[in-house]
Amino acid sequence: MTKRCSIASAIGIVDILEKNDLTDDDYAHMRKVIGYAHRHLEQRPSGDIVDSNWRHSLMNWGHDPLEP
Image 1: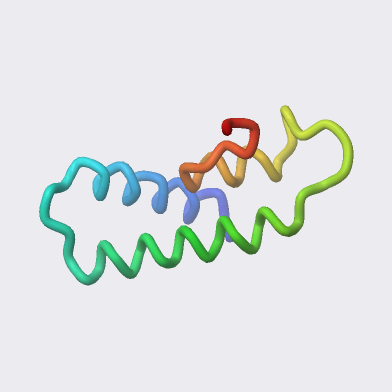
Image 2: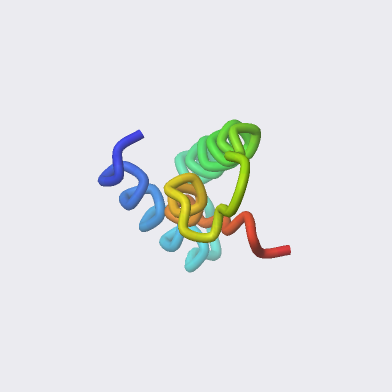
């Protein structure tokens, strides 16, 4: 996943959150984001993650692993 692709996905997530009526494409994108987050969370690195690329990648997709 490239940084440009994850940023485009983040923009898509924001667009979806601002909508009232979701399309099939919106639901497909949400499934893609959830799948990515689940796979990425399984690859958590050891040690401090505050400034890790792993955390920032997840944050680009709308999930901060440090938030409850």
